[in-house]
Every structure is written in C-alpha cells, then in structure tokens.
Image (cartoon, rainbow, N blue to C red; front, side, top):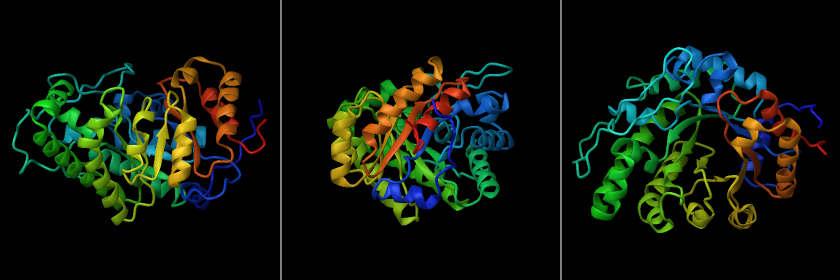
Length: 352
C-alpha cells in the first residue's frame, strides 16, 4: 500500500468537483468524523461536545492527523437544536466514551401541540449551539478561508423526531398529517436559525437527516412530508450565499434517490449499502456531486491493507465521474488512525 499523501485539495479544486466538471487529480476525501474527534486529543465525546475550546482543539487535531478535504463542526449532531428547545441530552462523565443522546421521554413536544408561536432558539445564546458556532469561528480563523468548513445541522425529519419522539411522530404521520407538516415547518425554521449562526462566522453547512432513510420511512412518506421542507431549506441556503448544501441520509437510499435529486441539495450520499451504479447514473444525468461511503465497521476492525484495497475499488468505479467524492460512514470512536489514512491513501492520484 502506498502511503505518500498529497496535500488537501484547494477550495478551487473542491468547487470544481461540486460543479461536476471533468474529473481532477483525485476525488475529495471526506471521512465522517464526529464523536471520534475526541480521540485525537485523548478526550471523550461528552467532554468536547460541551466545551468550545476542546472542540476547537479536536477539530484542529483531526485536520493535522487526517488531512481531510473538509472539516465538519459537530459531535452529537442530532441533539443540538432539540436541546436548545428544551429536550434533555444525557451526557457521560469521566472516561465514558458513549455518545450523548436524547432518551425516550426526554422530548418536549406533544403531538397536536400548537407551534405557531413556538420558540426559535438563538444560536448565540441557547443550549450548546454557541459552542459549535465558537468552534467554527476559531477553526476558520486558525486555518484560513481555503479550508472547506461545514457546520453540522439536523435535517427536518430527524429534528422532528428529537423534538417529538420517533413513535409519536410516526403515528402522527398517519393520524394527523397536517400537524406533522406543522412540526416539520417548525423544524425548518430552527435549522435556518442555527445555520445562520454558522454562516455568519464563515462556515458552510452539512445537513444530517438519517431518520428519514427509506429503511425507516417509506419513499411516499418522504415525498409527502420531508421533501417540501428540505427543498425550502436548500433554496434558503442558496439565498444566503452558501456554495454547497450536502444532504446526508445514511442507509440504502437508492429507493428515494430520484426524490432526493428534487431537494435542491447539490451534494448527495450513496452510503456503503446503496446501489452506486444507479446513484451514479442519476447524479450524472442531473449534474449532482455524489459521495460514496465505505463501511465504518471495516474502518473500526479491519487492516489498512484491506481498507485500502476496498476503497481503491470504489475510487476506480468513480474515477471518470464528474462530481465523485470518496467518504466513509460515521467512524466509530477509537478507530485506528492508520485505517482512516488508508482511505485517504487510496484517493491519491498515484495509488495502484
């Protein structure tokens, strides 16, 4: 396995990929690193998620150790907006490396509630939103404007689940669909407010909505409930000068690929369980960038040599595709750094 690594792509090179121009010297390398950020500074996810200075140090350490072509500000990415609305997040103390989360019963919205005057959190004052905003500002100042820096926000359906609870929201889709549209519209307003905080400090965005995966939610329901509010968000982001709106929905999203192309998000995901050939055909026709992931289990447990060969096979499949990006699913805490670097090595132009 060759390990000589080129420098990160320039912003101009990345933008060329996102515009789906002719393939360049190598695909962007985008590992999904969230709770694992803490590992780079020998800390824990709960610690860095509650301290702007620690989160800044973890982001900078990630950049130094992995040299990704993009950094994403976030740890427990599905909790922040809901927490700022009053949901209780469970954190873990000491050496416990569990990921913070909202447990059943800690949601704050009851089905059927009137949301017309519901609070929109302030990203500069409410919950832990200010921690992420401060970390984004610090990293932008430290690394400069050429680094692709994205602020993590929840997608509308995933935020609605955090606010309401999964069972209650799924039942409401059947029993009270008009109210579900209301709670999704409310989620959209919250996400815009948080996003504006990132934009104001020079970060772009990355949207996570894996609770809307067709493995959990039917394509017809996605189109009915989630597509309109996601489309509205992408349109709003463009009016704010955001150059790229990645939409991340994990799992096999092939059944909703054509619907996702209607969202207006220009950077979509084919996870490691998705049908890359079908996704590629659709994205090439529509002129959209496409990220292909490899399995997080592979990165956690396999060898650098196997990871390299697996990634290299995917890179070759996308080598002549304008807009091809090489990524990973969310990397588990404590995964060996050499395994992540094997993915990067396989993206190099001289890899064999």
